[in-house]
Image (cartoon, rainbow, N blue to C red):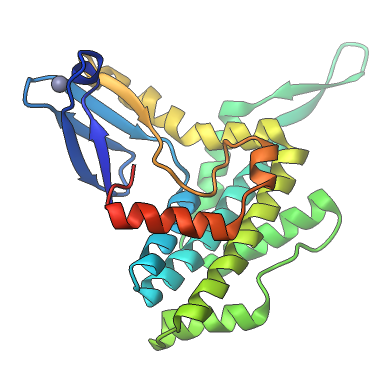
Length: 262
Ligand SMILES: [Zn+2]
């Protein structure tokens, strides 16, 4: 997937100076335009947003196996996002007692962040562990078992990922819709119940990056960059509620034809 970016200085002066970059695991992309302006783009999207969108592009281009693989990965990374939000909601405060032995709550953001990263390492390589963590965190938070992807769709996904099966266009589209509604419903639930934690977790990764790297980019334009994706954590609840799968598919098809994923 290639993203289209523009030099900020040139844009302010009314000129267009563009570059294409391949999406990588790095959050950042450096681009010096032909007039010597240095730009650093920081990608401000969560992986599940990008993966779902890449699935739609692959579907639109007729690569159905790749589409299914991307949708399946989007579900797994969405679970990761949910685990982070629910952990933050439960974990970033601790009870302390004041001089009158009254309970107060103390924020332990940095301390919790560090512990969370260490704990995640134990889960990061095994998606089954992540699914287990998601189910139990959801249970203790919402007091019920989460609705999960139906088993027939899990088998469908396994056939493609593990057995090399070739899915039809119709089945791929159905799986895309199941994935879309699954993520949309859970995202709405998270944003409604815990808007602050959802926002905090969403912006944490990019903030960490900025804190670590900012000094080395003196003299550059630091630009936060968010490509179009159908599912977006940052959208308002009303916009999320009104999201429609067929519209998302049409929009992806139009963008895919133009080959300009911006
Ligand atoms: Zn420039």
